[in-house]
Image (cartoon, rainbow, N blue to C red; front, side, top):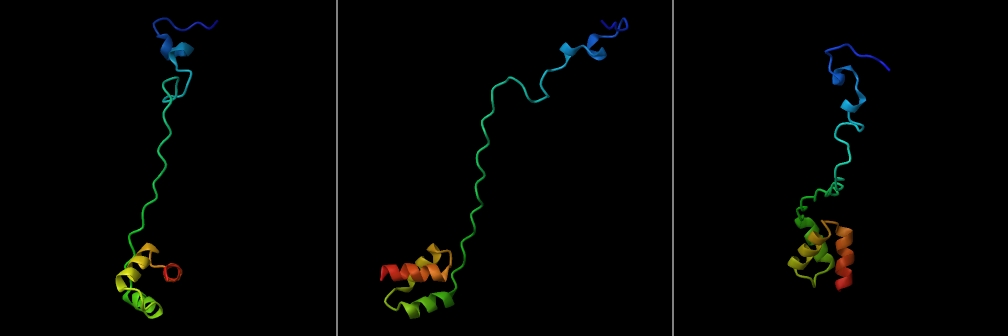
Length: 90
C-alpha cells in the first residue's frame, strides 16, 4: 500500500473515504419532486375591431352588437370562427 508523508492529513493526500461517492448535490437524500409544468403565457385579449363587428352585423342583422362582440371575443377576433359560431346560433 502507498505510504503518505507524516503530518499530512489523509483527506489532502487522497483518502477515498474523504470524498463523496456521488457528485456534489446528488446523493441518497430524499428524491426531489419533478418541477411543475410550465404554464403557457396567456395572450392578452385582442381588441375587437369595429369594422369586424360591422361586417358581422351586416351578415347577421338579427344579432345584437353585444352578442357579435362577445362571439368575436370568444374566438379571439377570428372572424371565420365567429361566422361559424353565429351560424350555429341562428
